[in-house]
Image (cartoon, rainbow, N blue to C red; front, side):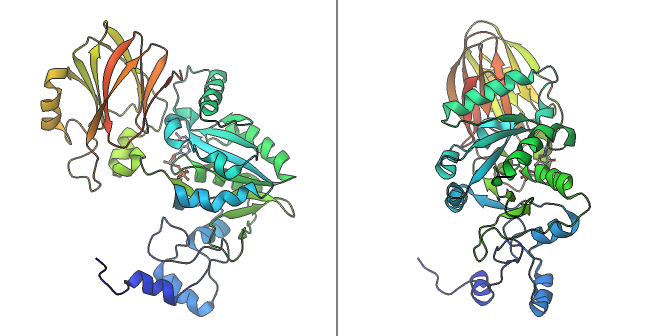
Length: 382
Ligand code: GDP
């Protein structure tokens, strides 16, 4: 039932309709992660002066530092369908540790026939022994399977400027003819990458950002590189089922890796179970004795037990020994849901955001992952 009346937010929107002169977003003081954010106290002051830069554009102008804002999948695809009308070159940034979770399967829909390249970021997280050519080939295959045909694949670490050179060379070539759009879901490292590009192109100079579509709230930021073209940063797309949304800061620190993963191998018999902290569980249902290798954060606690004791064990220890998620965390963690898989030796089972496992024998497993978090059976990455 309607409760009637407008809330404070609606009233604010009705009365104050200011736009950022940098990116065109409507100014708001409610959510720092959303477009057009400006601290309420500054907003009050600026009303008198009349010039509105949102916090993001302000930082970009004055500190050459980019802050990400977020937007939902649908809104994003809808807004950016205009890319297909522009002469655009699209750079899609993904996280190599969470390929499926950061893949934008709807990319074709909004870029139309425009060429796009893939930037697989955080390559520093992969074990040192990994061959980069193989990963590039593997990524192309994965994207082809989803009807996406990247023109080129760049493996890099946005936090390592030297690894960006090949991408920068390509951008230099493209931007002479058309705009370069950078797109990606949140947490893939898009802001880190843009900040590096700003440093590369801007140096100490002030970068003047402009609204790409004046008068609209399409929250893109343009970094002009020629008279008519530039790099266009788009809002980070929120994928609703990302593991990170269900963890607090402490939990993310534990489960999301920040250095090269050291694979961990366990020799298991059918009837044994491994817990991945409190966020996942693998029951070995049937098959010969096999080696299970896990590519998860080195900080993720892995606990072995018997499958017939696993339910009780989980109830007793979740949130404590089996954590994250922690007992007292403010965010609700979805319950674990079991899904059955027949896994072959050349395949991975990937839990979006948590990592993946692979085996050396054909096995039947029940994989427990938070409800709604994507699980993918795929050809082995490594
Ligand atoms: P955005 O939401 O896509 O803009 O992502 P951010 O740039 O805010 O980065 C998300 C997280 O990934 C942060 O914790 C970054 O420190 C981290 N990150 C970004 N680039 C890299 C990288 O190349 N390697 C690693 N290991 N972490 C990175």
